Length: 133
Image (cartoon, rainbow, N blue to C red; front, top):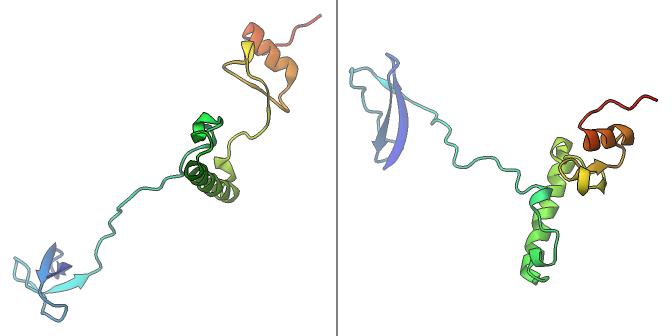
């Protein structure tokens, strides 16, 4: 049995099962002639970018002490992520090196290229205004 989407001349849409593709279309409940229409698109899954760089392991324990299968799996996933970021740079995020991430910079790390005076004032005093002498 094959399922077909059908539409009658009055505009009613319905689905019907036919034994063969060569069978005649059944009539609509209203009695009008019907025609086969393309089936509606059914989305089975959703788009997924995979894990971000922040979610990937950064320690020896994270890769189960270098277990070959775990390392191979993470390498495959990281390679996919690299290709995705090459194609869509907006997904890469901020890739600049972190210069300071402890103490006053714990919540907001200092990255290479950041204006140092403003970041220090913000982390230390909670303000972005530079001190005037």
